[in-house]
Length: 302
Image (cartoon, rainbow, N blue to C red; front, side, top):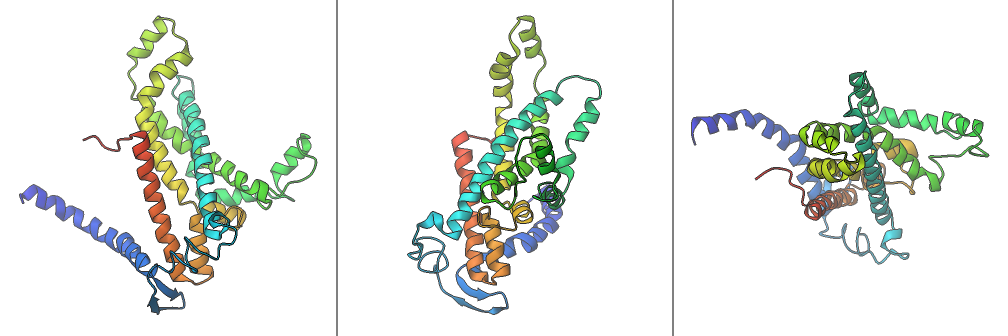
């Protein structure tokens, strides 16, 4: 090992040690608890039970007590809610972010100010955004209901975050409002790297702007666009705070992370909650692998 490599490892050592303490050790501890029967009030009295938290009459999967099927169980509902939220919100954020990025990539007066203003929703902490929207969507005092009533779009006030038919869509709408600037920022960075000469040639040849977008712009930004989608998808699959604040972990919107918190903290069942946490980690990892293989995204050049 030469001096440069030794020096590099020396500088990396504190960071690696910190990651081991705050990330690796809790993950390994959670995996261990997943195979035990453990109560939050007495962690030392944990009892090894093998795969019972995962499979069997007390497990997450293949549980014979699921009379209405797996997808009607709490864990099945949490998985379905999480993927519904992730797919819909990421799709809408990608489309909206692409539109905003294309607009911000144009030359106009005050472009820098507009770019800064667009980032405001993303800069606001998620808890603050969720609480702010919870008040605006309130069925009695919310400004959203009042505006819709004044405009004649609804006949009576709607409990947006309390009604099972509108709660998930309300959560998705708030998430799209908050995270679209993040997608727009990443896509805008990709747009600014594109060569200008091909656009000049297309304009000279009289090619329609839509055709230029489909044949030139979109293929050139495909790779960074899919990378942005990957990161946003992974973030959406672990959603907790937004749903918890807006709907209080209601069964119609509870996510996988929400169920983990409910079992570990509220119910005190650390073993079962850790099994759900471990399953969540594996589901997110598997989703990332499937998406990367399906889209052939390269996160790094060989």
